[in-house]
Length: 106
Image 1 (tube, rainbow, N blue to C red):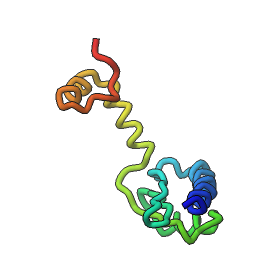
Image 2 (image 1 turned 30 degrees about the vertical axis):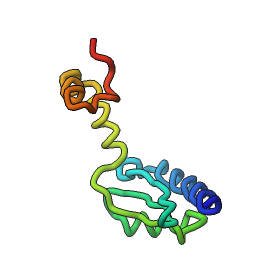
Image 3 (image 1 turned 120 degrees about the vertical axis):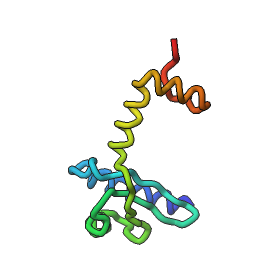
Image 4 (image 1 turned 90 degrees about the horizontal axis):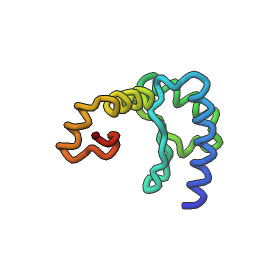
């Protein structure tokens, strides 16, 4: 497991550099799936292109899988911000018992 985590960490650094070079709008994140022994990276489109490019950049391409996702991380973060800024919606979430991230209601 330790070796897999080290391989994932070195891959993660390369993935981060790739994303920071202008792919933020289509990147959804990456994660290690230890039970599968793989690192997954999600993109909203052109998965084959991203996979080819990433596999040429990461030190351990054998554990990298690139998958298609519906929403980019930046999009999800914007949506979360909108929810947290909407007092009425936060009250609704409180009523449903999922309000933990909303600011306190005064």
